[in-house]
Length: 387
View 1 (cartoon, helix red, strand yellow):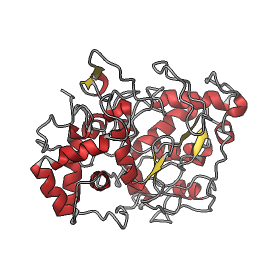
View 2 (cartoon, helix red, strand yellow):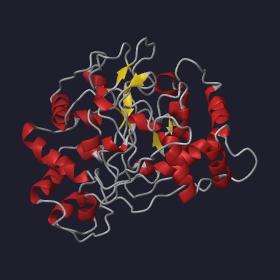
View 3 (tube, rainbow, N blue to C red):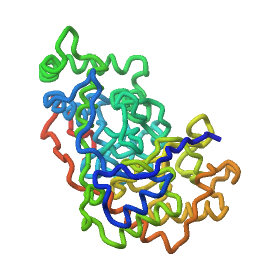
View 4 (tube, rainbow, N blue to C red):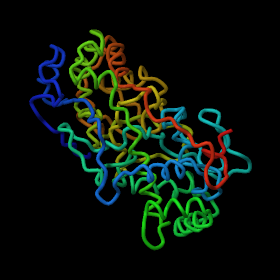
């Protein structure tokens, strides 16, 4: 069992500590501390955000030139129309055609489904933020298994993955060299890399990653109704939503979903039932069936839910947790003794579900950067084969 360290404190770190009785009650909850997101994002010292770098990163994000078969871009599975996530349980990467739930593999096909649900990129700039609003962008955990840290390191992982962007025609050892060669053959990219990364040989994989990361750090939603409420606007959320916030903490959800991002970024064995579309069991971190606590922000864009997209609605998610709290285990490879103690301590019943869902909707925001380039320097379809 992976041990989970929960930060304990005595009060919330919201910008307005006077607040309502609802906020006062939350401040007394020792294991579930929440506050508004900061309005500004930190950047690593070796990758300061600039307008030029963001512009370059946006082009790369939408350009399928980065994929082995030039058919899929980062935006294919993280598109602004879907809140930079995807309305699919499991993504279809290279050799796919179509958008979202209509996306299918072209025939013939040797590419498997991506084995995990696509996180939204919104607010990943704040990954790793603790209950005191502290975070280090160079140590920000990424993916469901926390296997790399920082947006810079995350950006190259899909390019290397066979089922995501690399495909069958290049090995992991040569795909990045191929991408560099392609970019060096496109005058617009040569010019933009020279402008943003001065020095010899500016088109390098690490600079590709830095540009994409700079763009992704602009994709934030820091003014949800919950954020407004925690900054002192008592009317930003309704009384029923405040009640849902209190219930969220009372039943124990906040023990893992804490901090401004509503995630402790730790690994937990939850026991989500397997997705039958997968041919092999996904054993998660250290093969213990542990996965990182996801953020609860912008859930309206990230259905289906859980690491394998197993549940289609928040109601289904809460019903699953109700089963766990009642001693029912839905994962055939796990015993009840394997489930994280924090999960088994949940005290959730049907009557709390609707108020909690009502509260979770206060964490949604639709005001974020949705700009899509009219064209990309490669001349390939913007966003990959999504038409």
